[in-house]
Every structure is written in structure tokens, then in C-alpha cells.
Image (cartoon, rainbow, N blue to C red; front, top):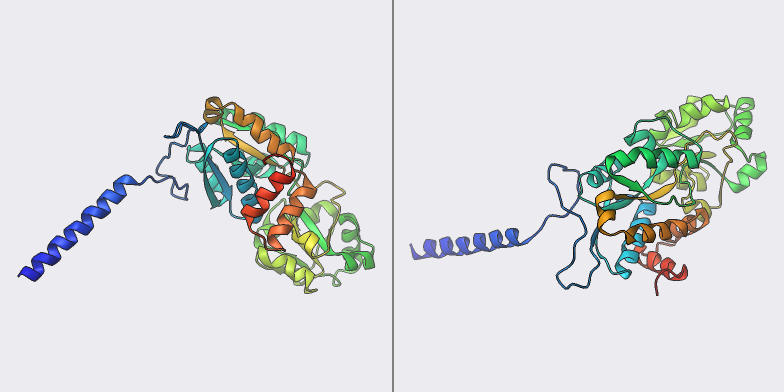
Length: 324
């Protein structure tokens, strides 16, 4: 009997400790469950030294991880109490921003225009940016300066193969496929193969079509390796991916401007900006320092040289003269 009483009191103590721990913790993770709300509005920290609290969100691929880390480190260095919430899908991170679970993240103009605002795709970077900036004002979201890099879809070839065939533009690729339809194999992920701003639209716009037997579908992460290893001749990719440099690939010129603009922009909640107006200047400074060459190099350093994202972000901020 004493033995069971001892077990009872031990269980009671454990349960009490667990309850105290739960009461003392705060759930600030922006996840796919949008039922809860997290007040992420900047506020003074307990030590009185912070300019405010900022929750930085991000998506689940290398470029976004780099952008989120750059932003977090920079704002911390400027005196803000920063929390990072990353590895979210596009729909989740957008909802987290709208619901106040995060305060700022980097979004692409084309994604916002087509997916969130349900408007037609736009290949002109300035026009796409102006549309999303003006339209999102009604949603309480502020688009800062757009960075001078466009992570749109890209059609890629190995440099030696492209030079051998004399293909530099998508129009030249289209002409070659029409003349020799069974010569080249094309690698694509499932999404690009079915989207209207993907392969179907591209072929319609340029007037050509790969035979179905020459279109190979695979996971996005395998596309670049398949092209590098000579398993395919042409592949879809993304214009700022570091493996373009690492694998000596070339981006065929989109000479008919088919692909939509996907410039990256820091997007912040209006309520947060009103609390800390300095954030606008800081975020614009980051955007103004980033261009295509820089982003490709940063992605290359992480994806190909396998360097730590935090280390890469901090080193770039130092080299740009943004932090000591």
C-alpha cells in the first residue's frame, strides 16, 4: 500500500511540474495551424535596451533562409529583439503575416500577384511591384524597396552543350526543337509541367513543343544534378540558384519576356512599421544592397560550398559594410 502511495505522490509532483512549465512558456511558432494568434507587435524588452521585438519569417528553401538570416542578424545588430520563424510554405508564411504571427518576411512580386492577389502574371518588374505594393495597402501590408534580383523561372543548359548547338535564347531552343524534336530531353518538376506560367504556357508563347517522351519529371532538388550529370539536355530552374554557377550552367535568354517577374521584397505589417518607423529605412537598406550577382553568390556558397547559413549571412553583412 505504501508503495502505491509513493507512486501516486511521485506522479502528482511530475504532473504539477509539467503544468507549471506549460504555464510559463509562450507559443510564438508560426505554423500551418492558423487557429491561434500571436501578438508579434514590437515591444520593449524587459532589460529596456531593445528598440522593440520583431518576428522575422521565411520560406523553406536556401534563398529564403539566407534572406531571413540576413534580416535577423541586421536588425539584432541595430538594437532589436528578433525572433526567427522559418521553413514555412508560401501560403503559411503569408497567413502568418496577415494574422500577426510574424512581422516581416521576404516575398516575391510574382507569387503575391498571382497566388495571393489573384491577378494576371506580369513580366515587367516595375509594374508587378507597383501593383502588389498598391493592392496590399488594403491588407495592412507594406512592401519596402524591391531588391534588384529576379528569382523567376529559368531555362537552363550545360554551357558546353548550349555552345555546341548555338543556343543562347529560348527562341533558338524552340527553333531547334521544332527541327529536331527527338534530340533534346527536358527536365521539369511537377508544378512547372502543369502551370500556365510554366511549360504549357512557355511552349505556346514560343511556338514549340517537346514530345511527351522527352519530358522527364522529377523532384526540384534533382533538376540541377540531372543536367550537370548529362542525364538531360535542358532543365527548368530558378534564375538566382547558386548551382547555376557551381555546375557551369547557362540561363537561356527569355527574349520574348514570357516569365513573370519575381523580385524579392521585404513585406512588413503596417502596425509594426507605425511602432518603429526606423524599420523602413533598415529594410530598404538591405534590399538596396542585394542584386542578382550577390544572390547567386550567396546561394552558391550555401548550396555548393555547404557553408553555414548564419556564417554566410554575417560575412556578407560585414563585407557590405552594414555591420561591424
